[in-house]
Amino acid sequence: MVGFYFGSLMVFFLFVLASATPRNLPTLSFHEGYSHLFGDDNLMILKDGKTVHISLDERTGAGFMSQDLYLHGFFSTSIKLPADYTAGVVVAFYMSNGDIFERNHDELDFEFLGNIRGKDWRIQTNVYGNGSTRVGREERYGLWFDPSEDFHHYSILWTENQIIFYVDNVPIREIQRTEGMGGDFPSKPMSLYATIWDGSNWATDGGRYKVNYRYSPYIAEFSDLILHGCAVDPIEQLRNCDNGNIVLEALNAEPVSSKITSDQRSKMESFRKKHMTYSYCYDHVRYPSPPSECVINPGEAERLRAVDPITFRGGRHPHGKRHHRSRASLVEATTI
Ligand SMILES: *[C@@H]1O[C@H](CO)[C@@H](O)[C@H](O)[C@H]1NC(C)=O
Image 1: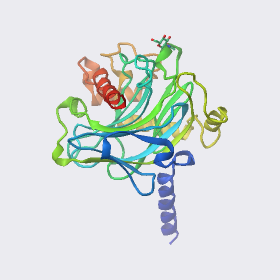
Image 2: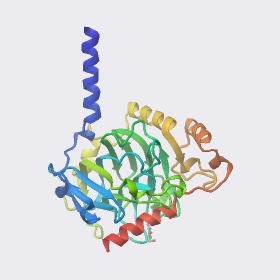
Image 3: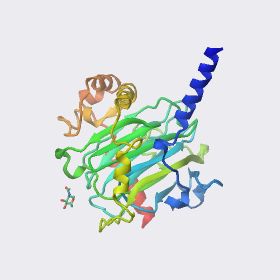
Image 4: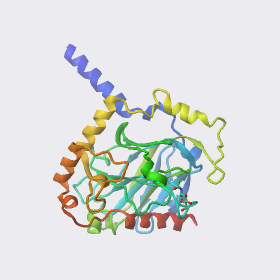
């Protein structure tokens, strides 16, 4: 009996933990924070006003972007990805200012790369600063759940000196600004974007598997929209919120701390040891000596040597510029 109650309580707590909004921050309705970017009627707002569907079919993908630009903050959404055959389909949740700073833009990415039937989605994170598109800082991972089965939270924390990517409140990647990074650390106000598009030429196995429109429309569902930042004018860098310190104060106060607790850090380390499949920091072909922000971890190195020996032997990687350009030109084409 005691065991039964204890068991139910545990299930209850686990449920509460899994479903809690990141940092208990308030969620916005779509129209409070975002606007439709492209894709005509391939964007649908549900009755609750807080859930958005964007879809890809043979005519077009779709996307939305935040009404404001933000300098630092905590940005989050939950996503349920399309299921089954999704080769070539790319879903992205990212920050960028490429439409304003064409030559020296900043960018922080979550990208979901579709897969052939029966294989899980993979995710990629990336960072660009001040137009550093020649330096790819990609990492790729598998997940510990099927992201097409249910909603999961994906969040980006960005402060003056630190970037953290989270999945369901677990930090999966941390970047501490170093002097060596120079302008490569994002430092100008950015907008938030969510898009779905045809990445046939690179997304799945370097382009071997293309989007198959027999299975379309591919629908990505977004909810729990959180924009916890201070809106900033991108050119004048003037803050539009009442008190510019609100965000940074909030970020440093419990429970919205920008510090990773030791418990979270061990979760991050175990995630990276189990699920990371690529990191530029260990790509000796592209970077004979790792960029200055890389923190080399022997456990990660060992795992990546096992999953991707090519990187350690020498060989070409399909990451980087090509993919970046395809997405950037898509955004440009749709915002002009
Ligand atoms: C960013 O790029 C611009 C234009 O290329 C350059 O003038 C500026 O010094 C760079 N900023 C940093 C912080 O590197």
